[in-house]
Amino acid sequence: QVQLVESGGGLVQAGGSLRLSCAASGIIFGINAMGWYRQAPGKQRELVASITSGGSTNYADSVKGRFTISRDNAKRMVYLQMNSLKPEDTAVYYCNADLRDGSTRWGQGTQVTVSS
Image 1 (cartoon, rainbow, N blue to C red):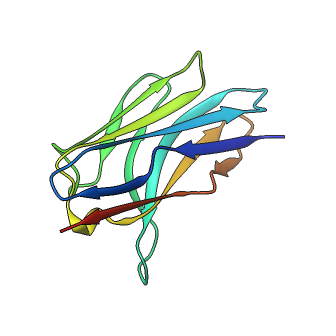
Image 2: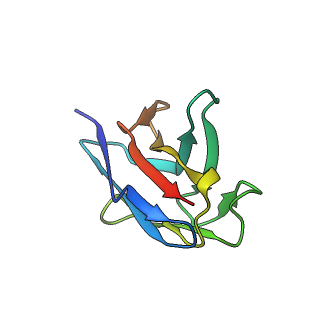
């Protein structure tokens, strides 16, 4: 059974940092792109950052220069280092993986709350 499990969310003051981790398991045919999305109350889920299997990255304009996505292909992990956090970064953050079997999988989400 394919699973994506996020960890590392929490409560932090504005200007602080958090590191999110996502572990993928039960995947047989490999992973293409992985990414982080977020959804704030009353808003649509939006892409935060993504990374291909080759390491090419893409960021939302709102997080460029503050967030860094990385992955460990051998461990099937993806990370999101979040620095200089702002209250508007408050959301549930979801890990996402595009698998080589053509399917897309989601984690259960982890809450990030940034206080002002």
